[in-house]
Amino acid sequence: MDRKKSARLFIQAQELMPGGVNSPVRAFRSVGGSPVFIKKAKGSHIFDVDGNEYIDYVLSWGPMLAGHAHPQVVKALKSAVENGTSYGAPTQLESELALRIMELYPSIKKVRMVSSGTEAAMSAIRVARGFTGRDKIIKFEGCYHGHADGLLVKAGSGGATFGVPDSKGVPESYARNTITVPFNDIDMFRKIVNEEWNSIACVIVEPVAGNIGCVLPAKGFLKTLREETARHGIVLIFDEVMTGFRVSLGGAQAAYGIVPDLTCLGKIIGGGLPVGAYGGRKDIMSVISPEGPVYQAGTLSGNPVAMTAGIETLKILSRKGVYEKLESRMEQLEKGLKDAARKAGVPAKFYRAGTMFCTYFTDSEVTDYETAKQSDTARFGRFFSGMLDRGIYLAPSQFEAGFISIAHSAADINRTIKVAYETMKTL
Ligand code: HOZ
Image (cartoon, rainbow, N blue to C red; front, side, top):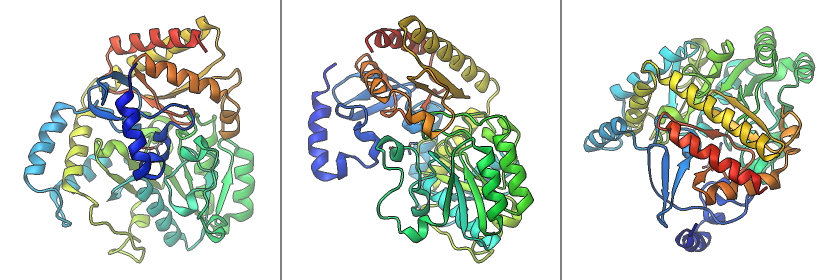
């Protein structure tokens, strides 16, 4: 497949931006080769500047659950833009999106819109600290909650991809307040909480760890987090930036039956525009300015264009039958990829939660960051390149999840399975 123009653009971009990109994982460094420069996307397909077409399983790292450029979203956006693109003042659209979110996430009694998942997570933590008067937080190894200072400790996503889970530039005094526990390690979590509870403001978790691939919560893990935090007055924050609307319409909290105190959302509630949100218990959310003493603000928060994309996307997702269709496509993909690996004689483990998934090249179960790291990442790199050259666009890292959308057809999935088998035979 010819990608000369992408390669040329990347050479230029490297002179202009660190690593030639505006977010590290995009640089393809862990899988080799040069990133694909995108020209446009429609439905389940994405097109590069050299005229190549790919079936897209990155979907802008998750948000395009309704497919790229969905006609209903595009139409609403066109008319929204005609009315101006930002006011920095209240609109009815904000309340409309807030109501839709609260209907689907009953744990959210009040919500604050922000502009990214990073902002949602760092703000939710500030609120938890303000509410409890405690400083420490617990996060899980390999979970990624955006790039705020205190969260770049044993972080997933680019941190895992490039082997730098603890970022330089984070003062030791910040990192000291972040306690890390291996994902799914119930005993260690209990021990730490029981010893240190009176200094712990919150526990933040991706209920399905999507920034080390797709690692499922072990039986009883999320329930233990809920019980122990409730017992000790610690705020439980579910970071559902990835799992929201993906694991189910009501997110991981609905799928696993756990009610967190605060929830972070992002990606899908912006339908591909820069949006995040955090919300939860009324007493906790009431500490936020101007109701309370915890400050958090943003000129672009609640931006009318972004709210419009979110509202239309949630309308599409709330239609009857959408999740049943997604489930059947996902089952088809799961079965096909497992069969392809078996027939090709390649050891692989496939995991998924709703429509987020990951294939690890290993014989052993992947249950946390350590076991994810033991998978054959070099083989993943070859798999990634083989798939790309055959028209399948996967996330360029073993430590990121794949996604499908409502636009992925049975034919897309069949083609992907066929190509996966061809590629796996060469690994
Ligand atoms: N944090 C994203 C993955 N979960 C990566 C975003 C990007 O590199 O664009």
